[in-house]
Image 1 (spheres, rainbow, N blue to C red):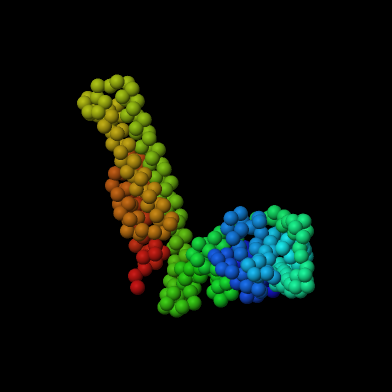
Image 2 (cartoon, rainbow, N blue to C red; image 1 turned 30 degrees about the vertical axis):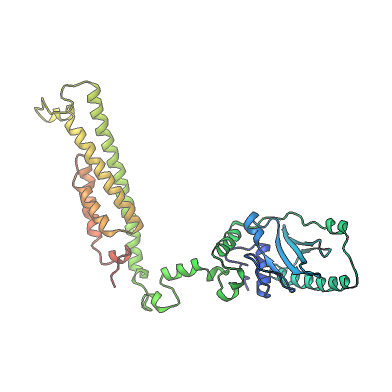
Length: 341
């Protein structure tokens, strides 16, 4: 049997300890509250320094207003439990992580019972003895563990709801359940799109979606080539300006085809047309690869094909025509997320 993670995707020792305490019915005092005789825990240190200062397991003490605070820190693969108030110090090594929480709780409660009897008989803890038991600084928890607890406590939710709601298991988290609904795998038939396998999961639509990604990449490559053509046009126009020609902007002196490259009107038009072509085709390619905004993709293909000047004409018209033809497929609306019910 595969043992699930302790909480969400976290497999930290401190996460296992917390889970064991919650399942044993220990109240969560992180957001406030008084510790009962049977104990309550706080994960406040996890929020402050990732748990390096340990989890706190607090019990009502022998005298009124007295509390016994046990500090539980993770040190590599072991857990150290310390309490100067009750002269308790013990390391847990080699214990299966799933058994740590209940084991610590059982040992500490047994120690408290014996310690209360000792105090009732007149036992007094010396200051030097209490100070000799200092909890070490432990290893901090993982980022996933810290973020999970921070989200719960920020929303005002303690860990006590974990077993009933199942949110600390990866398969039961809100993100996982939301992803299942998005894929049409929700438990409610409403979220399974009428209890019918979505058409987007058919082999034909998966093949069509892959072809849209390839075609989108082709549009983006054509856009880059168009941008290079525009750059050449702008460079040639700048070269004519550098030569200080009298016909920098106007087409004066145009007598034939050989003169086309000596005037600035054609290079500038080539630059403007290539910029529009490249922008429209590149954006259309991005949206096609993401399979979003079907109408926008069609409009951009038409816009990109209109200013097909110079070398862009050889790529713009046929590529835009082929892409528009492919977008007439009956699978297009579903693949682009625009299926109509």
